[in-house]
Amino acid sequence: QVQLVESGGGLVQAGGSLRLSCAASRRTFNSYVMGWFRQAPGKERELVAAVSWSGGTTYYTDSVKGRFTISRDNAVTTMYLQMNSLKPEDTAVYYCAADRSPLIGLNGAEYDYWGQGTQVTVSP
Image 1 (tube, rainbow, N blue to C red):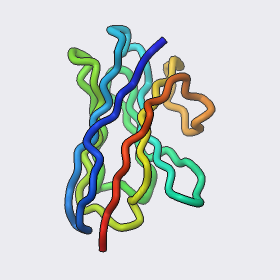
Image 2 (cartoon, rainbow, N blue to C red):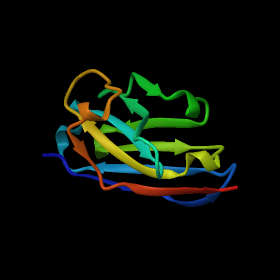
Image 3 (cartoon, rainbow, N blue to C red):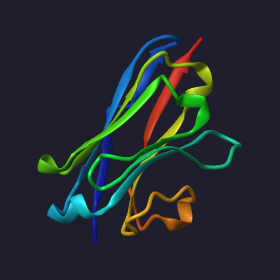
Image 4 (tube, rainbow, N blue to C red):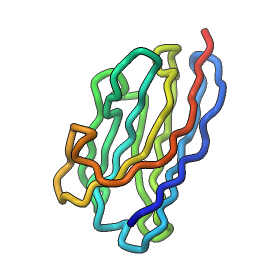
């Protein structure tokens, strides 16, 4: 069992930045693919970014490329999402998730553990 706790959400104006963190409870954190998902009201959950266990491979959905950066520090079992140039359409609840598979999955059903979510609100 892996417990995931997100932090760093909040209210920011368009063009601003936030950094989300996801702290994992297990030292085997470095064997999991990690991802950030988001879900806005009335919309389906979508994968925003994901990172391989080593940090060497990343995935970004098209709408955040060039603005968001995913990273992980296995030594402190924490994953991050640096979000710059935020837009109102980035407003959502952001969830971190862990996948025991060695490959980056794009579907939320592939992820085994989830955090409780953190709200990100971007005002115009």
